[in-house]
Image 1: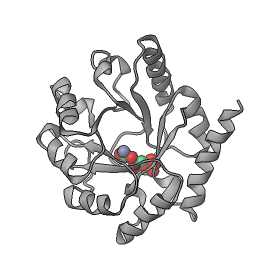
Image 2 (image 1 turned 45 degrees about the vertical axis):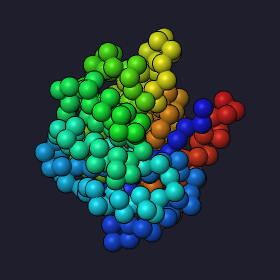
Image 3 (image 1 turned 180 degrees about the vertical axis):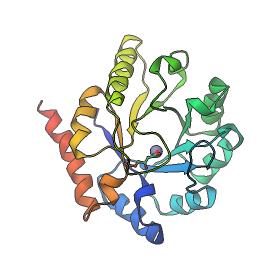
Length: 223
Ligand code: DX5
Ligand code: ZN
């Protein structure tokens, strides 16, 4: 299966948000990644429902909403109504994770769970059957532009192995510090979805950057 690229709008110029969304529409991207931060689960605050609704009006791509918030179960339906196609909650924020996963599915979107760098993949063993996606954080969540943590590669490999052994279907997404220099290694480890913030929007030519990611896929075909 071809991998998906999900540019993260967090790294875009918020004075020209619609332009950033249109740019992603016109590129070879697959999803648009939206980072919601509450200032409690992570030490930063980003944006919420009104901004997601505005982005939804402009986006031609599925919205991949990454909730870095405490008590996400209080807001799942509202994120679905705002236009989320995929909702990912954090393992570390959900005492009743199984219930929250089904709450997402009942609201309509695909259900993902994210693991912080300190959380072992084994923690998801009893819910993997119920998931559409596992998000492996390769930085500590809260900010764009951080350095990639290499342990994430082992976690992707472990998840891919267990998915094959148990004949499951969840996607493996990786988020944080992803760039052209590590994309090939991440895809070979088993990542299905690459999130890229700075390596797309903090460059002179975001469209070209996206195309370069997609060339990595093309090369893979011949490996
Ligand atoms: C980090 C966010 C990421 C971030 C990625 O908390 O979840 O999605 O936007 O940004 P880069 O690609 O710059 O690390
Ligand atoms: Zn994210």
